[in-house]
Structure formats: C-alpha cells, structure tokens
Image (cartoon, rainbow, N blue to C red; front, side, top):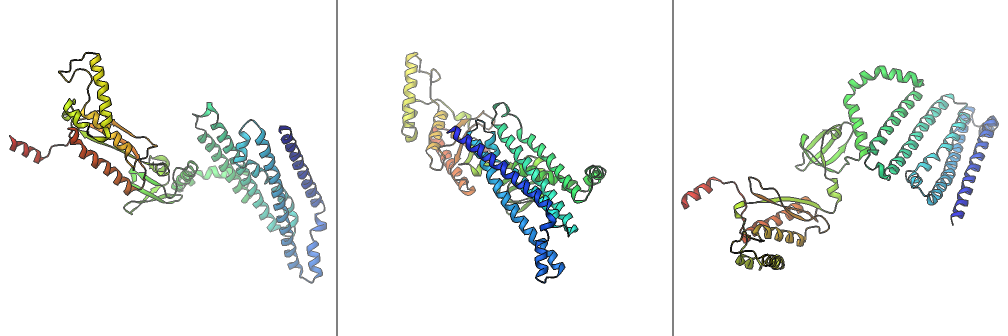
Length: 452
C-alpha cells in the first residue's frame, strides 16, 4: 500500500513538472510569435468592414477574453494537481506539518503563481497597441503579485503557528504574538511596495519620503492610526464580534456590540442606550466578553448567604431525630451519625459534653442539604461544577456560597432560577436553627428596648 501511494505521488509530481514545462514552452513560443497572431482578430474584423479603431478595441477585448480563459484553465489544472500531490504526501508522511500546510491552503495559494506569470507574460502583447492600458494592467498585476505573496506568507505563518502549538516545549510560548509581529511587518512591507509601484516611485525613495512625513502623519492621524492598529488586533485575536455581550465598566457599557469600525465600537446597553467606545480601548483597557458563557452549556450562579455565627451549634440527639425527617438528607444523617457514634464508642469518648469527640453541626447539615438540593434541582446543569462551600468568616457572619451553572442562559430565566433557589434556602434556614446575618435597624433597637 505504501509503495503504491509513493508511486502515485511520484507520478503526480512528474505530471506537474511536465505540465509546467508545456505551459512555459507555449508561453515562450507565444511571445516569440506574438506579432503573427496578435492581429488575427483585427485582420478578420477589417475584412468584415469594421473600422480600424473599433477593430483594434475588439481585437484587444477578444485576446483579453482568451487570456482570461487560458489563465483560468491553467490555474484550475495546476491547483488540482498541486493540491492532490500535497494531500497524498500528507496522508503518508509521519509529521503533521504537511497536514497543516494543506489545512491552511498553502498549496492552493502557491498554485496561483504560474497563472499569474502567464498573465504577466501575455499582457504586454495584448495591450501593445494601448500603452496606457498596458501600464495600468501591468501595475495591477504587480500589486496582485504582492497580495498573492502576502497570502502565501500568511498561510505559511499560520501553518508554523499551528505546528509549533503541537510541540510540548513551545506550549507555554506566545506563538500567536510572534506570528502577528511577522505578519504586521509583512503587511507593512507589502503595502509600501504596492504604493511605490502605483506611484512609480523607487522603493528606497518612497521609504525616505515616508520617513520625513511620518511625524506629521502620526500627529494628524493619531486616532485613525491607533484605531487601525486596534482593529487589526481585535480582528486577529478575535476579541470582539458583532453580537457579543461585553461589559466595560470604564465607559459604562454593558450590552451587545452592534457596530465595530476603525475608530469606535458601539454597544447597545440593556436599557437601550448606546455607548461608544474607542476601538483602541479594547486593547489598552480591560473588559469582559460574555461570549464564552453564551457558547457554553450553562450560566454560572455564584452567590452566598451570610449566617449569624452565634446560631451555629452542635446537634443533640433530639435535633438529629428531627432533622432525620428531612427527606433530602435523611439517609445522610443516619449514615453519618452511625459512623460518628462508632468512632466515639471505639475511642470511649465522654459524650456528657457535646464538645467531646466527633459531632454534627447544624451548619454542616445545612451545607449538605443545600448541596443535595442543588444537585437535584431540575434547572441546574449536572455536567458542570456544583459546589456549596463555606467562605472565611467576616464581620457580616459566615458566608455559605453556592457555585453552580443553570441550564437556561437567558437573563430573565437565569435570574428566576437563582431567585427560586435562594428563596427556598432562606426559608429553609429556620428548620436548621440558623439565622441570616442582618445589620441592625432602628426597629431592631426599639423591639429590644420593649422586651427589656
């Protein structure tokens, strides 16, 4: 099987080389005999009685159409052959580098080189009678050659980026940043080369003139330049898309992105107001993009209840019997208390004082109840993190935090689910002889004075 595939690859490469040689020979022959066939259509039109000027234009358009068809056919054939060759080679090679070459369309972009060379070779012949057109078309092809070069460079750099990310020793390196820097330099060089070609200015002179004018350009177009650079960074890093929900506290923005342009990003807040943010602020300041939450399987619930510390205590046997009637934790209490009693008996713990040995607390039982309640709640995603934890005590009591994810990510439904959970837990606290911490109010002092 391996030998058959290798034979096919060799045969395909030979066919590609042979096709390239045929095209090259035809181009050379066509150039050498250009004057012999360049006026074929012209002569035929003259014989039909068409005016010379009209015949010249129709001759040029006819030859241009033929060239476009030939270039398209050559591009199609070479692209098919080259892509097939790379695919066959990638399927049998041991490295995945060539797989990334195919995935990033490097062979497809390289295949455009020969058709471009054919077009550049034939264009002077077609437009020989129209020197003004010839100059414009020639410059256009040269600019396209620069763009094609940038496409190839970008595809190759993306291939290197994907390949380097698979190497264990480079996983912690900022590969994206390095590739972006190279790509920015390539785009700048390509842009300046294109301007130099369009303006018929030598590249060195163009750089000199650009350096002299750079100070004025930066001063006048500072915001535009910052916005342009920021737009490139935002696009390359996929930081923000239209439709994303972002929160930007510095600018008071909290809503959906409705427009991204060179200078500004428009955010429609949830109160339907519009906040305009400078584009460069997206890369210079910190903001929150909720896209990850929207595309995930749940929306996070992270809220706590503060328990009064003096309401926490050990549970007596009578209280344990009462709590055993709570269905969600009935089995837990029986099993847990059996383990505790066994431990205390084995170690001959004096249980005349509850402090001795191991004991259950009302707060611990409430945490277990909350955990079980959340795990069985129909609106909670069971495949994501579910946790009930006790945070560090504060001056406002002991926070018991619920950390889970709701199945429904829509804002109104999410708020309803979260409120429903905490309504239940707040109402359940008295059953565990626990109290929520609240700062005292005037009515609290009045009630205390009346009882005294």
